[in-house]
Image 1 (spheres, protein in one colour):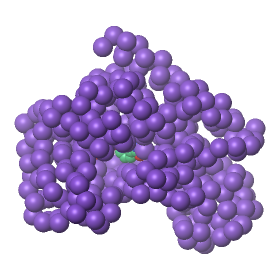
Image 2 (cartoon, rainbow, N blue to C red):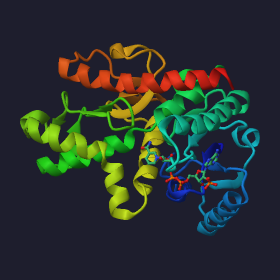
Image 3 (cartoon, helix red, strand yellow):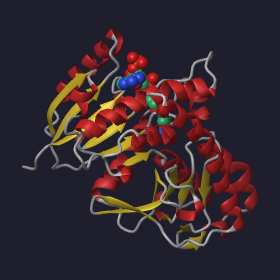
Length: 329
Ligand code: NDP
């Protein structure tokens, strides 16, 4: 029997949490032989703790053989102590009265506190995935507030954008998602994101020979970038099961490997491809031996550089705002 891995999920009683926790318990994230100590970190509010209690009752009722223990707490230190994996899902949603800077500020406070707690008590090799929006900037904040942890371990989720793109490409070309290689989404999980088919092969053929540039620019890119709003419009709620699925994919590949298959992860830049150091940026990665590596030595076209630049600008604008908040907190 393997030693249990401690997995912390924040905002576990929310929509995404309700899908995510049961998939984790079933072994979809870390494999069918990996026991898990699961911690739900909730906001210290009666309604949140009550909802978390209900979710725990349902997890208990699943009798998942891999769930070694489950508990919920509002205490950051207790939750993150010796954590091996942290899925930071809980975030403050934007309300009508908030502008973007209010939203950044409200979330900055959450991720500053969580980053500091992770720095203080988590396992030194903790793997962090930020899902709560604005995900890239929230991951940047948590990393800045955890200087004793390897910066590489703070990532944000762009796998949902990656997965959404795969299905759009597969449907357009009448292939399967597994027939698609070397695809990635660069940049920010926001409307500037760049789903890039420059190097993509579909059924062994160069992707851009299978559809025209007009479909790519006028349909594919906006469809992927605005998919979240389209789901809200259709379902009346934001993406939850697909977001949970993407979080599972992200961590599973990071921990168990993706071989030489490209995946998209938003990771702190080391200056690759002219992306300023430190920005948490969607890039193509491969995962092996519990680690990820950014795909190197791609020759970027002017078209790619232009799209990447737009994302750098969007993230730099947010970085300026949150750097000031961090400095004053
Ligand atoms: P919900 O509003 O359903 O759930 C959020 C949960 O987080 C609530 O239970 C909330 O509790 C809790 N929460 C809020 N603040 C904290 C905190 N400081 N500590 C712990 N828990 C907290 O949202 P969803 O589950 O639908 O989405 C969660 C986040 O994921 C959102 O920010 C959303 O925008 C983002 N998202 C990101 C995607 C991506 O691709 N990166 C895709 C889809 C969603 P309470 O109700 O008490 O406030």
